[in-house]
Length: 204
Image (cartoon, rainbow, N blue to C red; front, side, top):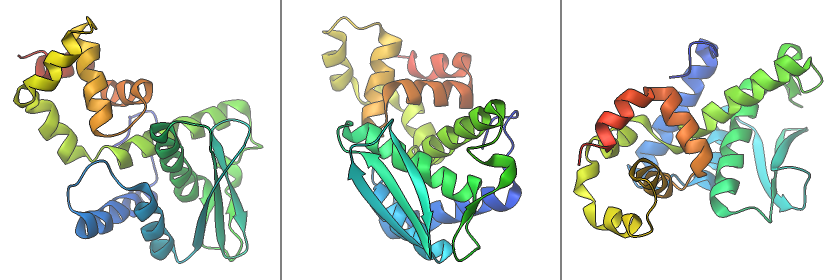
């Protein structure tokens, strides 16, 4: 699931997959993933209240623990795809950074925001990866990558803008999953490797 350099604890890995299984049973394979439903399902899964709050914030967003749960703050001026990614990233923090078993959750000392810079940087990267794993369900992602020749009309529209084919297709894919383009490219190149991706999406 995640890169070899960033191993996620088995228990947390299992919780993420449990969350996605709950979502799939409720919403099927419809895209893009509805992050608000995902947050509600996560709240039930970990038995905590989770509230989304949009407002002016420094950066993209952050999570605050409160008695009985969490507040996820999201920058209201961001694009919809960026807000979705931020929510996915903060879900990553709730599951990976926080010990949510307490009445008032607290950050795990070894992953806390006050830890050494290298630890914080690693934690942010892990939560980015969790966000993209949530927003781009693996089964659907692979099916769409392999079946890319089935959507030539949209590709033709992108080609008319004279965008290089690889990036035009990346852009279209990121729009299907409603994810920020830069994060989408970072994730799937990391997940599958550029050589395999090129063989899939440049086959037409």
